[in-house]
Length: 340
Ligand code: ADP
Ligand code: MG
Image (cartoon, rainbow, N blue to C red; front, side):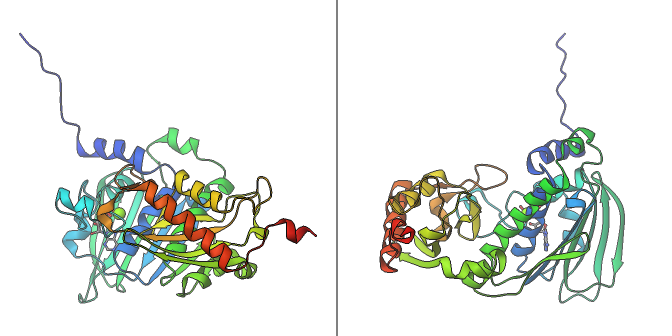
């Protein structure tokens, strides 16, 4: 007689497996929670971390909050308010859409959610640990949402042991925080680590936000860039060649307000700087690209830092020309002139 041995995995096991992909380290939690706050239309987002996020990560927003039902549902896998149909995947207007971040985080940490919608008198307070609901109460709360994530990887010792030093993990958190803050200058962001304020970034414009993040000296090196064609709109800033440095820490691409990495487009920029840089030097760039959502595919990797464009070659040419144009327009001289 045939023996059947296949079973569907229980939800908490499936969640824990998914968490392995979504949550690599504390910074992944930071990214997911901050993106959710942005999708909830918050104008003020506070990030609080302890011990580089290993002990505690909290994101407090003043966004739209959740109903009681949604506060419970948000921890289910594939539970999302952001898309409904497969077609929606090709016309995304939100950061999230997979509906798996919160289910994943709740599977591998202790999570406390407090949330209230503006029009409601009272809010909801939920504690969930390792996918198990511990408590659910009604509570007096301000408008918005707070997610508190403690003891990340408490039930996956191998993962916990693989976490790097606080310095390294905090570096990853800075990176995520910076990328998000640079993409959304209109939102007020604060970052507090071990009780002290690391960043306090009041709502402002793109230029001012870059300066607030990287320091006052940044202002003089920025040259504006602006280009609009049928398939792409480019805005932002590129760095004057004489300020180029060895590290790539000030190179940012955003596509439709999302930080992305793209070696091909990076190359377009480097080739526009051809002859203007000393060997091995890297120019700063903060480039905000806007394309019609249906011309990109963001669904390549769970962390969504890779994006597939419909027509990369055309974008390459447009971007390269736009950078060259800005460099020319602002009389950017070859670096040799500065050495004399
Ligand atoms: P996704 O962001 O892909 O939808 P998540 O697991 O991150 O998946 O979140 C699930 C749902 O929970 C979201 O679709 C949203 O409706 C709700 N949610 C999450 N965070 C917040 C927040 N800060 N404010 C309001 N609603 C939220
Ligand atoms: Mg999300």
